[in-house]
Structures are given as C-alpha cells and as structure tokens.
Amino acid sequence: MSKRRIFTAKFKTQVVLDVLSGVKSTAEACREYNLQSQVLNRWKAQFLDQAHTIFETDAQQNQEQHRLAELEQMVGRLTMELEAAKKVSAFLTSPLRPNGR
Image (cartoon, rainbow, N blue to C red; front, side, top):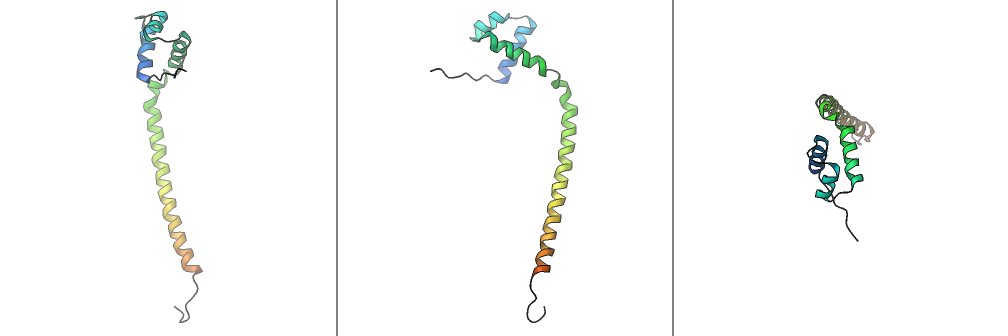
C-alpha cells in the first residue's frame, strides 16, 4: 500500500513555472519528478485560475485588516458594556439587608 506524497506550494509553483515558461515540457517534468500528467495539469489549471489574486492581495488585505480592526473594537466595546450590565444587574437584584443598606 503506497502513501500519498505531499508537495509544498513552492515545489508545485516551480514545476508549473518550468512547464509554462518552456524550460521543460510536461512529459519531461512528469518523468523528472515522477508525477502523473493529470496531477501536473491540475496544478497548472489551479495556478492559472488563481494567478490574478497575487496582485489583488494588497488591496484586499488592507480592507480585511481594516474590517478586522473595526470588529475587534466592537467586540471590546460590547464586552465592556456586558460587564457593566452584569454589575448593574447584580446590584439591582441583590436583596436589601435587614438594616436597609
């Protein structure tokens, strides 16, 4: 029973770039790295489908970081409000002592 090999993203990228740039043909890369052509074709398709995200990440990351900061501030504010509400609730629901204090 053979185990599946796990390839790093860096390795996959290098193999795909070698094939796309013409340094190696698909058959050469498959032979050299002992890969099935279907695997390499899937890597190429995935690489080409997601290549545009490399240049979009800066704008998206800034938007996501800004949104994350807003949400963290909201969580902090709501946590403080909840703690204050708990204290007020505990104070209002506590029975009065016999001496009235």
